Length: 261
Image (cartoon, rainbow, N blue to C red; front, side):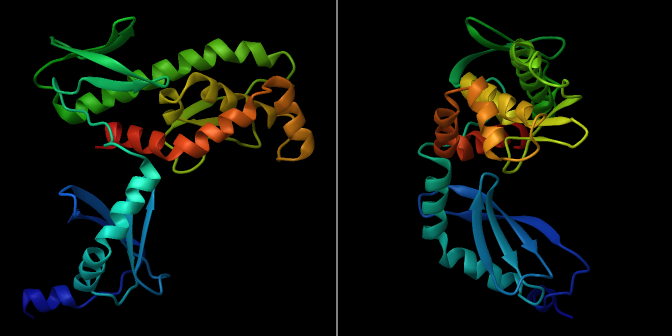
């Protein structure tokens, strides 16, 4: 069978299949679109969330029809990306070229230097990155993630004692990860998970999410009793919830752009 004919004929996948396709937008930008072939899909679908753009194809849709669908909806996709992620480009991590990185609601200046080993630290002058030439971008991203996790745990350890006295127990353990839509969760066993993106949000928003999840140790729901507990401990919670509605998608997308490439 000819290669082009093979490409036009869609194979029946056993499960969900994913890959990435590049798309040139009308403003000259190239973006990566996650292409998903899903046996449950009934039609071509284009969506945008904090992870970026996603094209879903039914089992029997050809790749060519998917590419055509993408090109026909370039203007819509560009508008959605602008609305979801806000004005301006997402941060990028380029060794010895990136001049600022987000941390605790601010853009911190970055100071680069070559060294025998990799190290990232923060002080009043900004973020200092020491990087050996052999490290590469993937290694740099791992070190940056570790840096953000260390900074996030420092904030948690500073706030946590303030709230533990009025709680039945402490959460154990507290995990940090990049979450798709949630900002935090608490398991029935008391294990807490927090979105690592919180460390680049304003500190009061991060603290609110911690308090929110701690209050689930008292009420494993969002009842009126739960919100009374939140109100008692963090009266300005409504302001922080509005902050996440306005900036949440961009926060998640920004950290993903830095750490996932």
